[in-house]
Image (cartoon, rainbow, N blue to C red):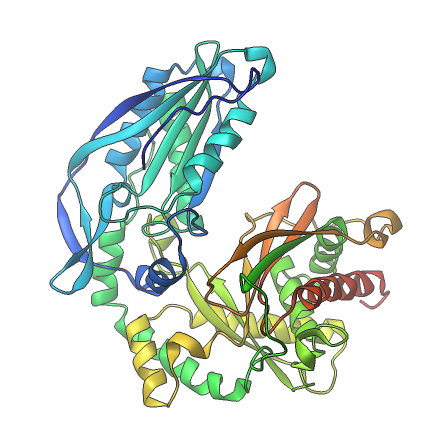
Length: 473
């Protein structure tokens, strides 16, 4: 990616230069992709554009003025970070007809040093950091040539106030980025990280090649048992000609969902992710509200929803810097029209089963699907993909009861990007928003027109609010 200066007006005008973080790590090595990398690569190849990437992970780290971090110290910290974590100096390249990950022992990471000339206009550098995160986060990575990390620092009155990092999802997942940011904070403030680094991407790939094979076999067997019971999927049939571009992304930002999900999670001693899974299953089973998806829910007794599992339950995986997350299959049983408490119990079991069997070799799963007459590349598209990408939060046990102002006001909906291609016909992302939860739907307008996509999200909101207001235990 080319780093260029792009001044606009007096409040955002800036001076920029590129510094280089010279890093020195350990080995130079090559190995196979991890299962998580393989699972992601189809999306990289088929659905990413050169202008915009939905797989880049943007993060900003605020630095207190009291820490006294100057640009040279920040660049040294970034060099130490990349030297510490092999995955951050690992690129993906073709070799003998297959993709391999290639780790470098040393190299140089370009770091954009962005100085805010008028400190009063942006005293803590937040405005500049947001602009840099968008600027660095939009373009697709050249995975064969670029390091899987882009970095910039925002300087106000001679001190670094923000560090902007954009990760390629080719080598890290959400969990790994949080570990890396904790290490970066320690390196900035103390000059060293107190613990040894965890497993790196090449280490994980080697474990998968050896000791994890039986786990993959069990997961593939689970998928082949469960998938045929899901039926055609909520979005199997076209309901119209669709729009151009074909895919639309919109978001519902809802304080009501935030408060209702927290209340229900505390009341039923479960997670807010399980609460959202249950509400989504109910909305899909009902067809997502009047005429959503052409009534494709069909009142079936089970709903198939695909979720993302972080796969951090294995020993030493909690600190691994790698791409470990994979898709899990949740079969939510709605037979007998359960009340919300019973639905939560079933959704929790479905999510546990899905997470337990979400660590597998994608090549083995694709072959298993083919052996049973399915094309793995297209078989999952008619189902909803529910991806909760919120950062983990503890739900206090004494969450207050339902409050009319927070539960009674519908969330605000807006349309976002238009896409030419996408892997799913309905993906719902769950994201943090200030005092709210944001549900973002990406809809294939041939199977889920925009108005019905919005109604699907509002039906999820309505069900959560109704359940939160209920006096049921």
